Image 1 (cartoon, rainbow, N blue to C red):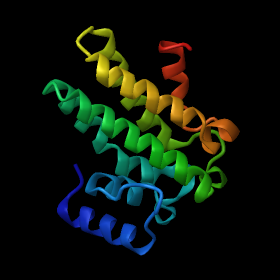
Image 2 (spheres, rainbow, N blue to C red):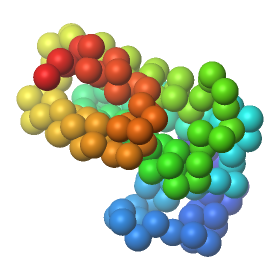
Image 3 (cartoon, one colour):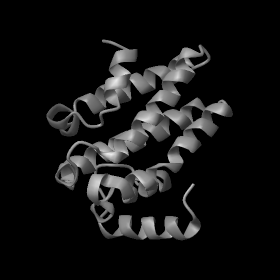
Image 4 (cartoon, one colour):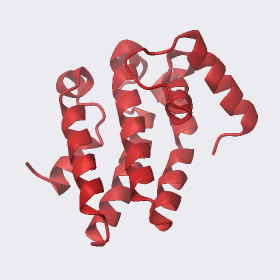
Length: 159
């Protein structure tokens, strides 16, 4: 989880250029700021580093039986990354390796393993399916195939 100082910096960045098409929750503000153009570097390594704590958060949520929280985290990360990939032209910063998507693939694997265990609630599975369908219709996915992690979802949960 990001330190208090990092969370403050992230929130300040979000306040400077907030999105108007989303609900500005504290979670979303942190994720949005992590994905922002200010953090773009070669291969998106800084963004990946800032998103990395969400792997542990998803794992912990699932461990506590907080399936809704885990689904929310995954969807929020994927939605923000898809938005910023196009809006901030992330595609100009990597050749063959887009580091943030490796974090997303890890998040997806964690959720898929939980679903395979048979304890995943139907309501949350449906919410996840709906969220994935929404992401598949984004410009980022249709034009660039991002988030690439959707490929793992499509292999696991074919239409």
